[in-house]
Length: 108
Image 1 (tube, one colour):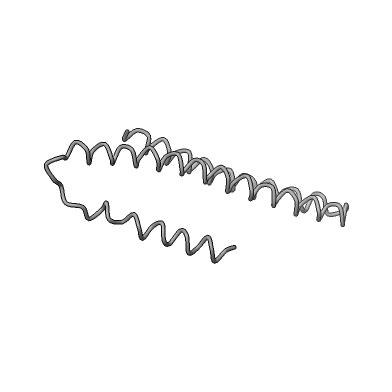
Image 2: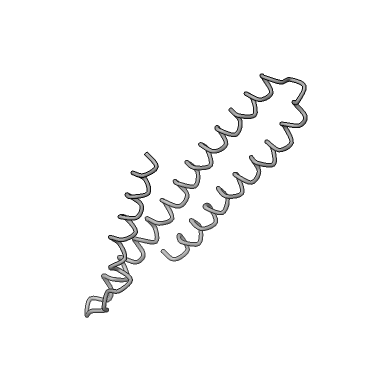
């Protein structure tokens, strides 16, 4: 699954680099629309993937922490603090994705 994701993302990045090297033509207005549409699409992907990745990561962190607490209830305090710190760091990455989406939306 990881290889499939890596190959598909590399293919996606490789196939869409042609827009960076395109020459400007007489129909510059249509190219401007394409840039705005791609910015809107990028904003949607940024927040969607950020939220999806953050939700999956937070679920895995909570599962691992609750698993550890269930196996050793005496280590509750030692597990809870790093778990909350990890959840805060994961959430900050999701907020960065939201910030990038807002910046891309401002270009539309």
